[in-house]
Image 1 (cartoon, rainbow, N blue to C red):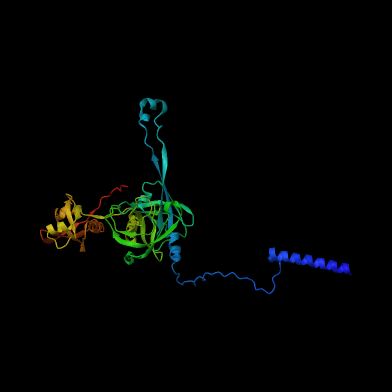
Image 2 (cartoon, helix red, strand yellow):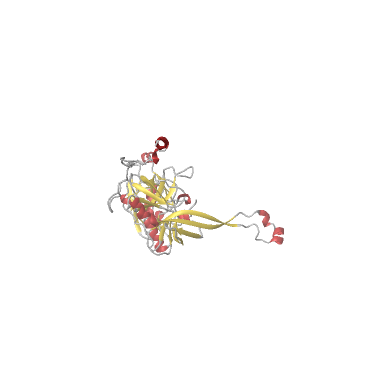
Length: 385
């Protein structure tokens, strides 16, 4: 009996020692009784709003509408390296032929475009496809198609391509008149070839001109990030409607500095319709050289204001010359529309229909005179880049 109690006491002592060790070193091994499970508190995101309800601080719906219509444009053209004069030596050509020394290579280009019609018409920049002999378009879903150049207009830096495909997503054109400084805009394109990218900003200014970018300038300025590769891409409003075609950036480093320019949709539509109809763009012309009326000139000419365009030169035999326009005249109105400066004069003249009669109002020797003339056709110009 004594031995039994001795064994029991030793066993109990060992059991208590083991329990102490486990409790101290591995308490998680012991069963937890009478304790509620621990709950980790986290903040759960609110459920998304019902369909059709507005989403705060999100332009996802606008991107969803517009992005499928924006494409990436890849161009290539053949260029020849300059032939060394050594290869023109008659003795060399006698033994080795005349074909040596010419190493044709392919130069590639990158840009963006916007599908504006379910028939596959794409708006882009003239400089994106200039001199290209192969044009490939990559849709937003990754599908690649060959594109045909329908026509281009160097003066406005716009071009129209066409692709063949089914169920092509066409963007909705917005109204330029509804665009205001301060409106939120989205720039969609393929900057640096990284893939379709959306940037957001506001309309910084309207009617930007005198930039020396195009012959006809009436740009929308925006601070949405626009970089090389964005050219020809879409500038949309907060609803995803196209309001401009991204064209140029102001940069000293080649990257975005927050100043980008887009061609308004109204100009793009007019150019596009003419190119699709005739393959080219026809503009009015009167054959004058104009300069700005400065406050000093306005004072010397005794003008009531510094508006209008001073006629500095008249092309002999041109429409203005035949109508009786003389150097020193100040053009103040064209077909009933006020001329503010040489840029507005250029745009008003370009909008006239060649071959039709038009009127102009001039200020000459403190008097205003009205002249009739026949609108000429603006000669084609070669864009320099």
